[in-house]
Image (cartoon, rainbow, N blue to C red):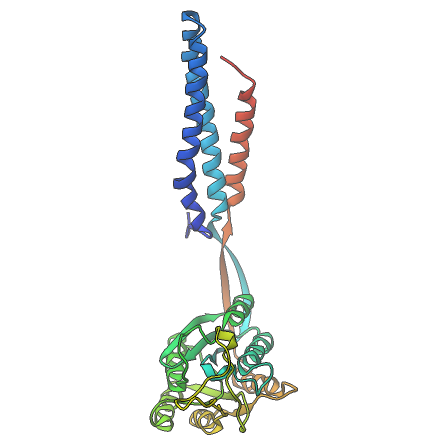
Length: 335
């Protein structure tokens, strides 16, 4: 079998949890019925011995049926189905800021919600390009590798939240470094990093750190497109989304005002020959980003062969059904 796997392997634990109980159930029934027959006298002892084999055979059929049903639930897969498609070729990483300041509501309903919406729009418009996702805050990042699977990307974006990295600060250079590593390993000609952030950096000397990371990205042929989310005037940071009341406070118990820091996002883009954009009410930034990427990969066609394991659970269900039918047939039979 080629690349055998169970898609829902957690169901296999039922083999350990359920089978002993079923076997015990059948054993108790067997003992009870044989004991009752034996009370009828010596003439019934031979019949009791024959019934022992009958009950054990039926128990074996039931147990095997349960085994095959559990295996079917675990969705066994093997073999491969192939589909050749033609893909226009850029590798793109969406780096979305999930620091605490992204909860600010100056980009209604929140900066993070607006960033998620932008990502979904880009995934729709950039179908045919491989896309990966980095959710970053501080020195932590959650990564989804490059893929053509649009539904998987959208599911990941829907799950993105400020708690995904358990960090309240922004570190854009860390996102750039992580994306550079991923895109360099991918090895394609057109490589784009789209940073979606409010740019509010908490690290020491952020200009130097971001500049160095962006230059390394440029040396590896990566273009950075930065998208600013938020307002220059700034906004308070509500904490209700993380289970706390009120707003984030500073050391003097005053509400923290978080402001869009465009200069750092512009710096990252400029170092690589990319562009800086700000989210707009009409989502015009989506068209500008799409246009930029189309210019990069125009005329470049790459063939991919998609391979997916085939579902085989139906075979196991069919065997289980035959075993159940056999057990039902024997139900009315007595030795």
